[in-house]
Length: 95
Image (cartoon, rainbow, N blue to C red; front, side):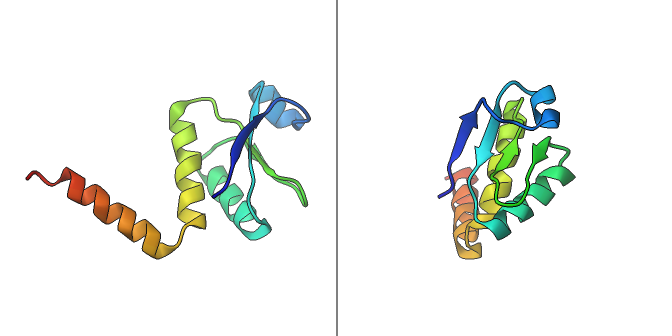
């Protein structure tokens, strides 16, 4: 499981201008870049450089949910995601 943690120091100039704190997402190299690209597509402020963790400015609950969903979609197995979706559908079905 990947860890999300707040980090108040050493943020880049663009990220620091947007938010006082950043959230650091610890991922392996391949997943880090895939998450970074997807977050950029969603217009979330983030930065990623070689051998540095992914940093994301999360200013709203919706942004936090988007980051969580992207990380889950990229890092979890397809079977795990399918099982989760099926459990969600079963919970919504009236009994």
